[in-house]
Length: 161
Image (cartoon, rainbow, N blue to C red):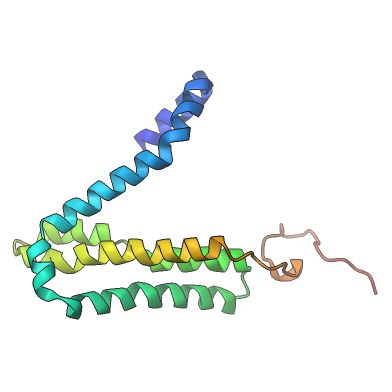
């Protein structure tokens, strides 16, 4: 919340500084994210290596299936391709970081954190792969009636007969 307030204040009272900072925000966000993921994995590194692929595969499937179900669930509800892709990415990227924090806070056994730490990695990989793949796949033109983006009470269709 603090960063949002700072951003709003900068944009209002120092727009030049706000634009300069905004230009570097994605890089800063990436560094912070990598640091958080690295910290969660580093503490569990030996347990992760000992578990091997028997721990990796279920977590890969968890995030991949989440993305697949998110996409086809949204399409089944007749949402647009763009919205369906967004839902897929969001469902593929479950909150593994939150699971790690909860495990660390509520369980004394350090091994409880291991699945969440591994999930953080696969969540990032699966969600990023979806985002990158879809970036290079153009969204096909859709019928405006199926787009679910129009305002209620307005017509977006052409009434030609």
